[in-house]
Length: 147
Image 1: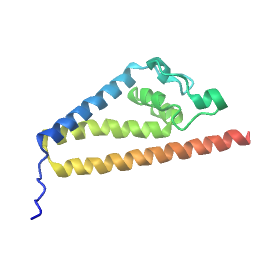
Image 2: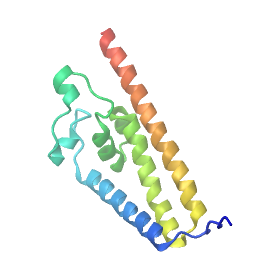
Image 3: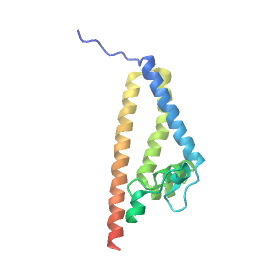
Image 4: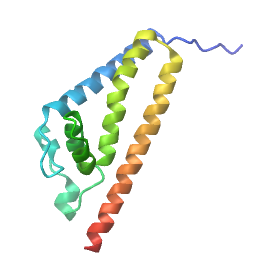
């Protein structure tokens, strides 16, 4: 009839999660390698990326401005500065950082319910971080326009 789902992840799923873990480690490693820009945004330029189009065109930071800087600051433990650079980016860093040991445990044990719990954590954490980043951007935009 309806096959029951195995409580264990198969090899393909575990391999995919291991690759994801390696990717997160690489991104956090890059953040550790970068020097946070003192202006609070622009750290991404060290990766050869162009300046923010929003800042160039309108002189206004976009919701993602400061995200790379926030990660570089978070890995250095400079949490207050990271939150100022981009609160949403700082929260995304926490989601990624917490995910690494969690994913390693899931890959090791292969337990499907742990993977499902992690997915809910990532979905909630990522959506929450993006909502907060957008809300902070709207607030800062409002403050800028009033001055």
